[in-house]
View (cartoon, rainbow, N blue to C red):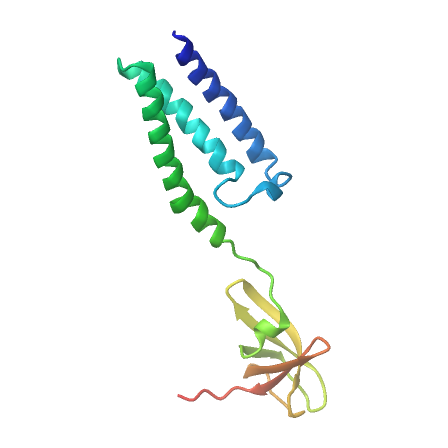
Length: 169
């Protein structure tokens, strides 16, 4: 085994171990994430260099300088593909289950506890994150019966102000 093969092999093992540690402690290092020069892309770039260099040395009889240049090119291409087709979409696909009362305005809910005039009942709103139940009162202090659809108009001190929903169609 030549010296450059050993460098690639030890680099592959070392970067692999560092990657495992990074996966385990990524939350602690999360502040270092700054665009394309984040730890994930740097570690993958180095890992691809070591892996492709080691494989090329084993499978071809190319000169070491050509193998290093080819490993750099292969690693650049693979890191680019990894970053733009996997890491960027994953970062933008992060979905939060949090919601605000303002985000529920305009939604249609269903009455599960009848709303008396000048009193409170309860409604449920179905969202992509699940079912949310909230205390509700009639917007104009009107009575709304069980299982009626309601439109959320406003909220006040944790109480949704609703009107009976009448679809246009």
